[in-house]
Amino acid sequence: MSLDLKMEWSDTDVAKLLGSVNDDRDWRLEADKNGIVSLQDKTSHPTDVAYDESLHCFFEMWHQGTDFVGASAASDKQLVASVAKALRNNYPDLVKGQFIFI
Image 1 (tube, rainbow, N blue to C red):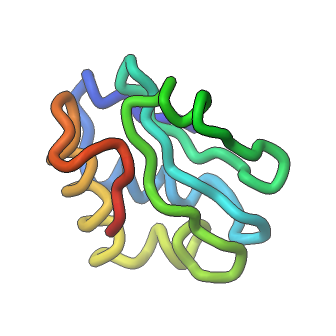
Image 2 (spheres, one colour; image 1 turned 180 degrees about the vertical axis):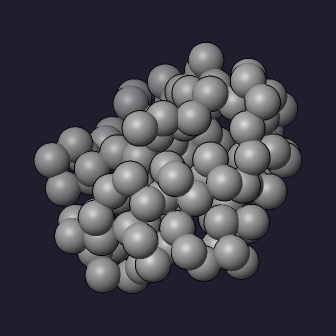
Image 3 (cartoon, rainbow, N blue to C red; image 1 turned 60 degrees about the vertical axis):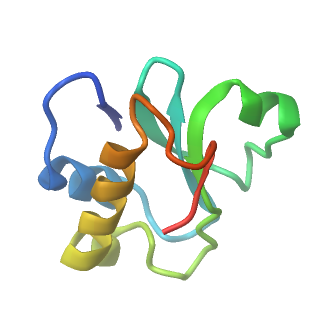
């Protein structure tokens, strides 16, 4: 699942995105240069500097078992609101650089 930041979206859409995967591996929320946000499996898709520079922005790594993704994360209204606010504040213009920590 992905979220297009150029279209209208809500906290509910962020919750759906966070709930679209299981908390059974390491994940990272990434937005590409076109404003498409997705969760990337960092267990099988490691990154390097060149990859990170090709993105608009990315969040910190959410390690397996930390409840930043999955059903628990999707139902955590405070987490969902924090992620949504960070996305709104950093697209289309970045506030403090590509790396976003919530």
